[in-house]
Amino acid sequence: MDKKIKHLGNLTGKVLLFGGVYSNLQALEALIEVAKQEGIPSENCICTGDIVGYCAQPEETIQTFKNWNPHSIVGNVEIQLTNNEDDCGCDFKSGSRCDNFSQQWYPYAKSKISRSALDYLSELPDHIKFTYNNFNVFVVHGSYSNVSEYIFKSTSWDVKQETFNNTNSDIILAGHSGLPFIDAKNNKTWINPGVIGMPANDGSTEVWYAILDDSTKPFSINFRKLAYNHTLTNRLMLNGLLPKSYAKTIVDGIWDNMEILPKAEQELQGKPIKL
Image 1 (cartoon, helix red, strand yellow):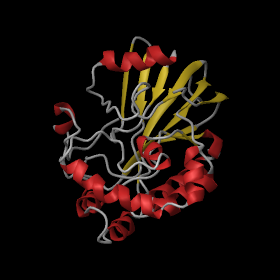
Image 2 (cartoon, rainbow, N blue to C red):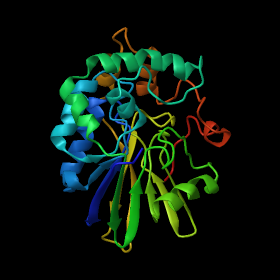
Image 3 (cartoon, rainbow, N blue to C red):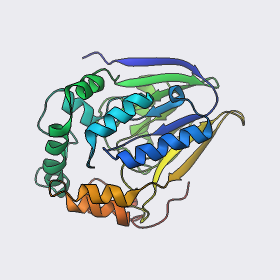
């Protein structure tokens, strides 16, 4: 199937990067406030997908996101929802804890989303591309070839190189893995700004995003932590319909399990992330 790619042309100034809103309305509202304070217009804000996810307010989150009007690609969750599928498409191992949890939060999200929200999600592109200070930038969710592929800092560069080759890009902006990182080799840079919907397994309630800034040449990438009303997010998730373990992660910053993580990332659990 042909991919839908949105071309933004040349972007200048600060560009706000984030992913994984995960139905966390409080985090999204806090990030919108950051954009206002930084003077970053919505057309310079880019999401790597998974607007919908583990938290309690999928419909409200989509409508707020739509009204803010940043750019976004589809994550696996958006694809599954708009195709009326019965699972989140994360390719979790059958019977795993992640798989069992997804059988709670995904049907909940599906039941809460309106037709207008689904129509909005169905219009999102598979990928975004733009230039930034003469660098070719391409946005993926997992990888170019697999929206659900988990790519981490420790993932082999050969795996990352395949996406660079497929997109003819200098910079890849990616999501899906839930952990912020930057990796560079051979004049190519892979950036995952992190997600705002859930903590990054670092023992903090704060979540991650990043800002590109071309005021220093060629550009800088600033990873930042975002504080938000996590106590409200946690309380709303304790509705008897969503996994209590995910609600707990909101307030203790620790993932319930690390099934998707390579050993290198597993060993970082509970440790502050330095970027």
